[in-house]
Amino acid sequence: MADNLSEALKTLKLSSADGASDSVEGCLDCLLKALAHNNVETSEKIQEMGVLAMMPALLSAQNSCTPKVANIIAEVAKNEFMRSPCVEAGLIPPLVQLLNCKDQEILLQTGRALGNICYDSHEGRSAVDAAGGAQIVAEHIKSQAESTDPATGKLLTVFCGMLMNYSNDNDSLQAQLISMGVIPTLVRLLGVHSQNTALTEMCLIAFGNLAELESSKEQFASTNIAEELVRLFRKQAEHEKKEMIFEVLAPLAENDVIKLQLVDAGLVECLLEVVAQTVDSDREEDVAQLKTASDLMVLLLLGDESMQKLFEGGKGSVFQRVLSWVPSNNHQLQLAGALAIANFARNDGNCIHMVDTGIVQKLLELLDRHVEEGNVTVQHAALSALRNLAIPVVNKSKMLLAGVSDVVLKFLKSEMPPVQFKLLGTLRMLIDTQADAAEQLGTNTKLVERLVEWCEAKDHAGVMGESNRLLSALIRHSKSKDVVRTVIQGGGVKHLVTMATSEHMIMQNEALVALGLIAALDLDCAEKDFVGANLVQVLHKLLTDEHSAPEIKYNSMILICSIMGSEPLHKEVQSLAFIDVVSKLRSHENKTVAHQASLTEQRLTAQS
Image 1 (tube, rainbow, N blue to C red):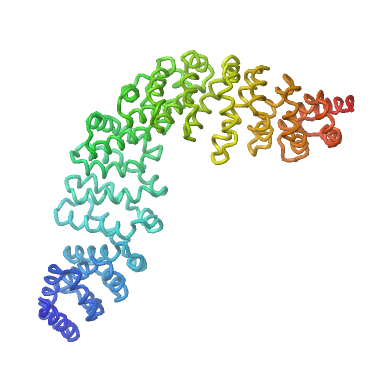
Image 2: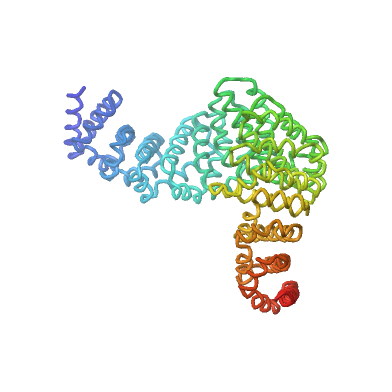
């Protein structure tokens, strides 16, 4: 074989020089045979003997040998080490030129050659891009999309593969294909050729690649991709095929318009069926499919319209089915069920309906099952759902009566920041406007101590911020001296003073109101902490900072008046010449600030 190959290569060099086509054809056949026998070795030999450099001339001749030459290039380019040499030998322009011919076999082999040269090769892609190859291939696909002839099906599969190799993992080339309009064409292919397994798989891989790009979503939304994918999904029995479709659905379903199209096309029913089929199985592929289907279900519920459609006023069969996941013994379904409730709980009407129909109890039972050695993602999801349900004012007292705060407090010992964050948010939502609950929680020393500890969680800004906000909320909503004393004794005052310097105005305000209540309800007890935390300097900074919002200035002045009863704080106020700062604010453009400045100035003057 090796001798024959060497002979063939020598003959080929000589023949191509004098244009003897019969001997060329024999040599090409010998090369193809050798490549089929040992591709790597033969390719190395072709490279060594400089045969690639003769290929452009052979390709340009366009005769009966042309498909064989293109086939040899396609075979050679299966090897990574041969792709750059193919480009350097100038093969791309004549190959792209061949895309303009009508011969199916030439087109097929040319498509293969270009596709293989582009595979994972920056040089290959750049050369095809420069020669305009992708545009011609895209036009071929478009013009032949409706043909159901088997030979055309094969050609379309090769061309789709070529475009994939050309654009894979390359955002700018993918964007180029999108602007050429390949998405509607590929969707059309999926509809016409749904019986052609190789072609539908190629389309799916193409969709998976293109769907990652944000700019593709609009084009996808203008096609009937949702119907086609759901139709294809229904026909699949094999796990791998379903998995391929899932990989396209997930990025597409991030778009709200497509979410609704998928719901309308009946995807939800397919997903529920997958869940029913896989829920009791331990097989690895079933477990994976259950996760993918339930995750996708939750993703569909992130769109406002698709979510509301499936909620159907709380009567929807999908809504009911998803609820039944919460008490299941499968962690993945528990998680998806809780996340789905959190997604349904995105407007007051839904939240009120769900609380009235007993969903809170289901979530509490789920959380109880995960207190000891619990699943963190399930804890996080269930707490998210409770937090959302607690937003409407009418739900708060009902949820408190159901014992939500008691169950949530069981997770105080959690060391997982995502759980801590949701736990804090849930409690803060629950006590909003609920004085009794705020007092009960605010006098719980264990809770207050844990909050003070988390106020120092510098590695977890979310937990730190929520702890501060809950500490402030306990005081603001209870207006209770007992709560104030618990917070002072727990070491919370310094954190509220720091919170007053936050970059978020809402947090500054919450801190100032809470500090004002501490000063009003128990100044003697808080005095030492106020001095230690440099409260007066902080207030001076807030009042002199021209970027401070009017309500910050207003609440800072209220607080100044509240601390004047303390001798050491009063002295600090005098030493910092607050009277000058405040008198300037009498001419503030905000009337409430200006009025409070006058009152504060009078107070400071009277006590100086």
